[in-house]
Image (tube, rainbow, N blue to C red; front, side, top):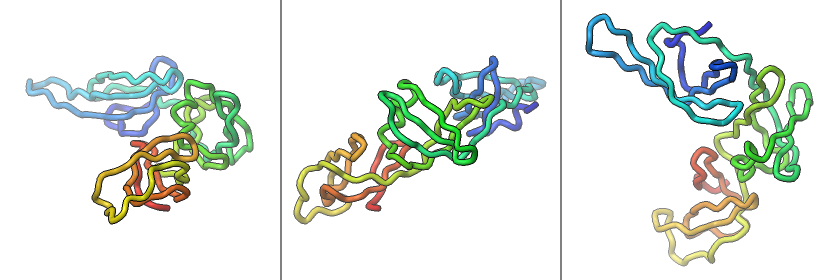
Length: 187
């Protein structure tokens, strides 16, 4: 059993028989004497992918989910979904179209990820913070461009479109932030 004082970003708790990943936690102290501290949470239900808000009273207890994180690897895209492998047990898991759509722009065959397993089945895939991808299409290099100049559009090998500095050219490997889909640096 966990109490609300144990809540932190990234913790997986069990609410309504589903694993829920806490995205944000805020502790709010009321001004009235004797009133309990309120713990406001924003969480993602890992079975339905819904993002919900819920307020708990200080001291409320919740169950910790039967959730494990394992090192995994993206194997290949299968139709509109994807196939992943647990690097500890070599078991393969399939992810449907709805969950895979947001991840596919960052995944190449062999990309290492973190698999979230709930009661023995895969319910989540956590991407690394950065991935390296090759620019396949962009406007020509602009002469005398600096890093602080405006940006231009670039299409990466996975189909992801991002803004890059004007000095980059086609064929360059770049680092991309997977949380914000933005250019970080050359790789």
